[in-house]
Length: 333
Picture 1 (tube, rainbow, N blue to C red):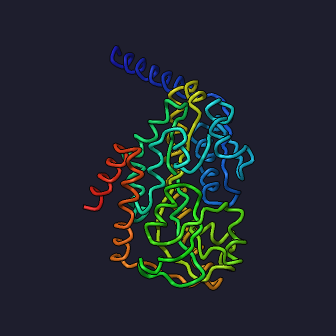
Picture 2: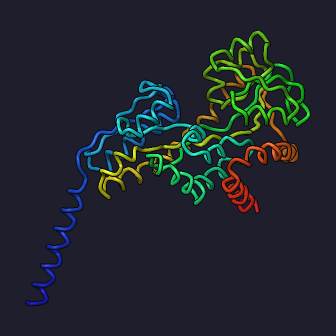
Picture 3: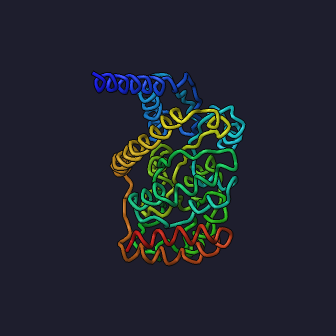
């Protein structure tokens, strides 16, 4: 009888403990700022994130999505996040270099050969260490999502070897890293606002440009660009970040819901992005674009051309650059 009594007490305490744990999750509503429009793979990832948070919290925690930049620019959203008026932002990880200079590493050219390499880096110790650097800036890094690899298009010729890029006038995002890697390929970089790009391509003020496939399709560049080359020359991880000011007011159970949901949504979102790329490529072919890609030998030559560029820009973040290259070398061995 005594043993039975003790067992019943233990069971009652376990039930009580479970009840207390279940009550730890409180009612919350969080705003999510995203620059891309509804239907984009990143916003689809946000929708999955919201679904998972609701499910894991028993409906107590809710994410309200604001796609299409309706809450402001990336810079404005990060500032609002630091102030606690926006709780979650999804943005290009490289933009966070304005907060922690080491994040410029994510804009380096030809770092990743494929999505598998990128996943291993951002999901591993390197990626987690990078997000941890944001804490002192009032930012909590939850997970990495995906925009996709950037590809080259031009109106002059198919690109099948490194030398084919020589002499092309290519529009680039206006920053020093992009200007330098285009110069390293003996091409002519032309910094230009994205809003001016279609007209510049149409008027042949520039020969080509580089962007993820989804951007090439959405902006109808196939109308003014005949040749598409799958270069995978730049991979921009997307950071899912949370306001530390708000995070510090959450308890362990609530934080776990958000962290687990962000990680689970990351796997889903990346798969959606990659599946979307396959369909997008088919649509661009149907639109009349001629598609080519580099052989492994030519890709190696491309990476070799980028080494001086990485060395130059790596001087500002030497330890982070060394660590990234060491991790990549380990993966490839």
